[in-house]
Amino acid sequence: PEDGVFSTAMPARGGEELQAIPGYYAEWVTDRCIDRFLQLEQQSGGRICLTGSYGELVRQFEEGAISAILHFEGAEAIATDLGNLDSYYKKGLRSLGLVWSRPNDFGFGVDFAFPGSPDTGPGLTPAGFELVAACNAKGILLDLSHLNEKGFWDVAQKSSKPLVASHSCMHGLCPCSRNLTDAQLAAIKESNGVVGINFAPAFLRSDGQLTAQTPIDEIVRHIRYGVDRMGIDHVAFGSDFDGVLLPEEVGSVAGFPKILTRLAEAGFDRPALEKIAYANWFRVLGETLL
Image (cartoon, rainbow, N blue to C red; front, side, top):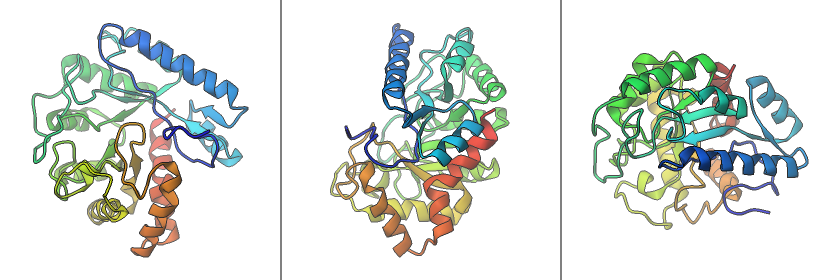
């Protein structure tokens, strides 16, 4: 059945995010989320598979399974001394957002202001720099969506892996503080990274309005802007199905064919569509996961 976020009833080629929440019980909540996902994996009869390596990802894709990348959106569950990072890695952690849109022990999140700049607050903390290095060494992807601009540049300087913003849009089209500036786009391109385009209307629309009456053409507009500035190898779908009000035309994961059709009508050929839909993510994961 489909619940609007995670569907096993239709073909899929994406990952699913498990999100921690802040507070002293973050580790407890995160462990419960992981346990719940492992139950879903077991109950799926092989349709859902936790991905621990790039080789596993490729095999799962070829077998038609839904590959799930275990991701923490915010590192609140990670001990400041990184003492439990190895334990979470063994449980499947392969993608980590250092922060959500708030401060924690590792850095400072960007707020949701329109119009607004992502340049809000200081950069990474000393523990944040240590976490970046540890994730690079373990092959854990670092997600820069929700991180403020100074933190972004700290990661860009420290990290040896492709820079990734999994669910962000273009500040040049929608001046929301959560969106990426052209300078950030250039850095992501230089690192051979990728931007996943968010489907949230407030990040897409030039007026910043949060309304489901937002056409798919707005998604196409941000993809085109990113491709024009970074190239086709550095733009992908980011969606954020579990966290936002979606454009009515999209609705759910079932709306992806509509977006692909609109992109084709806008002049994107089949190889370009494959890169946007999945191949760019495969490349970045191949350069990041061990």
